[in-house]
Image (tube, rainbow, N blue to C red):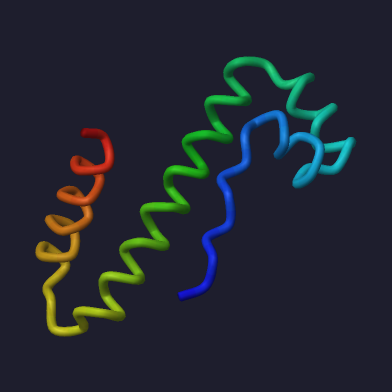
Amino acid sequence: MPARRPVLTCREMDSEALHPIQIRRFREMTPTEKWDVARGLLRTARETRRAGLRAVHPAWSSEEIERALATEIARARA
């Protein structure tokens, strides 16, 4: 089994994963803009997971996909 990569802290991500222009832009954002970015990321995560569920369970109806997605989200919040 391959070794797991360590989880990066926010400070490490600032220095390793983000370009200085990105960092500056995030710091300049209003709270509303930051909220819009967060909602967009959440929407993308849900769409990606929904597509993954469809790939693994092609026979499932849309309702079954949405139920499984809701269950996963509820578990992640617990």
